[in-house]
Image: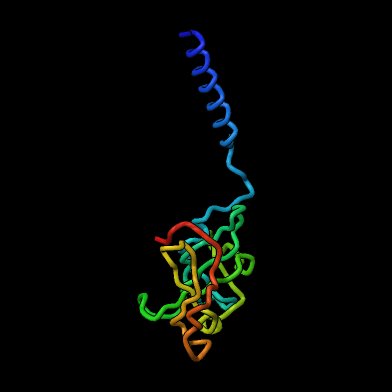
Length: 154
């Protein structure tokens, strides 16, 4: 009986270690960028004027980056607005050994875009119902517009 128990435990250990070995990589992909190239980085317009900063990186359930949340406007965090832009719209260029994020938009056009706020309960970005800048009135309280789920912000 002891031999069977020992053999069963040994088999489980071998199976677990074999499974774990398949979930790791021997080297990091060379054609990938790190999230730090985007998260908390400044975004500029084509004329190199600052638009805002990346507050969050949205990833879909398949692991694909779909959007960036960019904070625009305001001063020292007061009056700033979070907007969502498609990840593909942000371009990376290198200047003086530093990565620059650029977007073919202006700060003013993003100030007029729909605003989002992070909902900690659902861990999603939702339409900011208090944003009256683009609609002239608060968004309908029944509006359930949300961005895809992500990990908690800050």
